[in-house]
Amino acid sequence: MATLQFNRQEIAARALKPALLEMDGISRASVEAHYKLYQGYVNKRNEILRRLAEVDLTAANQVYSDIRALKVDLTFAIGGVKNHEVYFEHLGGDGGEPDGAIGALIARDFGSVAVWRADLKATGMAGRGWAWTAYDWDEERLSNYVGDAQNTFPIWNGTPLVALDVYEHAYFLDYQTDRGSYIEAFFANLDWAVVNDWVARYAIPV
Ligand SMILES: [Fe+2]
Image (cartoon, rainbow, N blue to C red; front, top):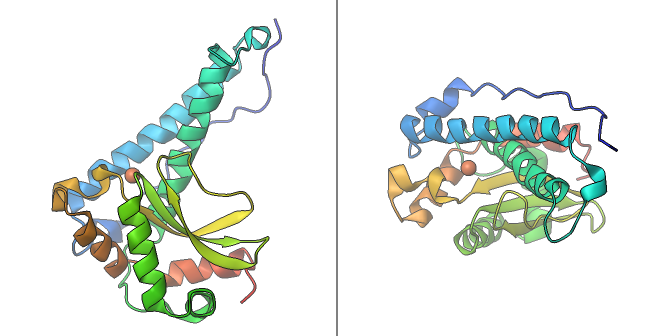
């Protein structure tokens, strides 16, 4: 039986920054529950890769097959890992106006911070899972993108710089159905220094 025996090294959940438990507007209880969901994505990613090592490749079928189910849901699990690692990493700050390189990029590509913020908030209100600000390496500019799930719809060759989680699990405990107020709290807790570190690390031209 043909099998996938390539690298399936397990990954571990990243530690939660202490500052995330002390935010204004996004409660400790909400963050702790959210972190458990993130750990679940890490565990499922590892489990799916273990199972892929045993799957029967000769039974592949587009209607239903084990490899189809595992491959589809692997993208959901890995998306859940990556999306939340961006989200948690750039929270715990003081919000305010984006400065430095990210401030310059936003001003250049959106015209103003107010336009960028209004567009990202509306994108978040329109999404079922995520709203993103990402740098598109082909168009050489920032854009805001919508995502309905962990594995939809961001584009290839883009680097996420702001990850706004709008799944109900991100805010229902604190805001019930008032997603707009949660999005305002999200902006108020962004850590722009972290985003500027990413701009530098990925050598995004400003
Ligand atoms: Fe989430």
